[in-house]
Image (cartoon, rainbow, N blue to C red; front, side, top):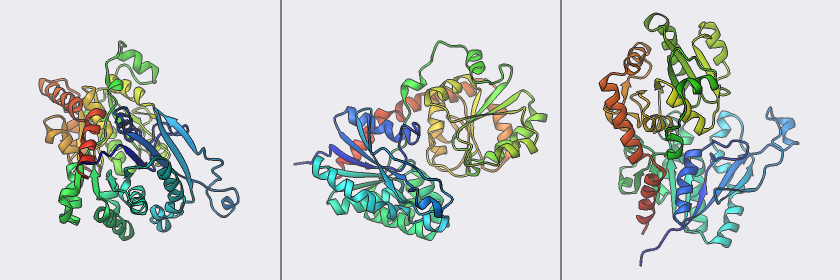
Length: 406
């Protein structure tokens, strides 16, 4: 008789919280759909915590009291204070450092709920933890890789590479967000082929529905020019996302297309030099930085822009591309990670080589021109997004993975 895997213990460093309501929102969307289908989801969310006494010996400020439990869409989330290891050398071991805090709570909750499986995100951190917790609790484990934990960090750090290899070898199932990431892991451990699955992130359909509001009204609300063509970037504002390439394109637009304005949506704290870079390149009049916005606001801005550009140097399967596809917004992105598969190798969007500002500039100018070809690509992208990148489709794929554990 086949076992039903209904009670799932999730370990995730990224998860929406009262302080950061959009962190790991794509993970929550999938879990919310599974919860609505009758699965019982419990989340352990390790939170770096610095006691007041310890703050005297580190540059980190004290974290204060961390709430231990809250409920989000009927999902119980336990925030577990963990003492992180600071510094690039020590931080590589944070996955292991979280375990003394996670294990007692996981064991107590397992005794209370009787979990069927442990599901962890990030192969070198909480995915690694999920495999060890699974062994300790005698439960099967599923580890999820998202992007840099597969194609970047293991190449530059032997400790992280070793942890990723161990996780892939010992997890009962490994899930990644794109075929490209799966091929990388297969190159590392080809014997695990039947244990490796692909399940991209997902969008919220309600955010991509058309609202009865004008483009001008949305632009005015967010302080965006009403007389320009808007080039939108959504994501973490870090060098790996090709931000410097995008700034170069903005400079080129002064002679190639003076009607462009660039909108950056996302947290700027990871690239504190950005304001200085914009000022030194004399781009203040061409760029608007909005900071972090709710998903519903991002969707509204997408409907008021002319193209989404993602000039990343490395990627998994970015949710911003999914959201743009679902919103009929033409996408210009680089040929890295899972992006070519998402855009059907150019059939559903525009692809350029990374680190090529001239090609990126020319392709943006092509995408914002509403030719029949641009419209056809956007229609294909819209159809694919609503068939492949919904929470329901993501949950379907995950239930298939659960069923394979039998």
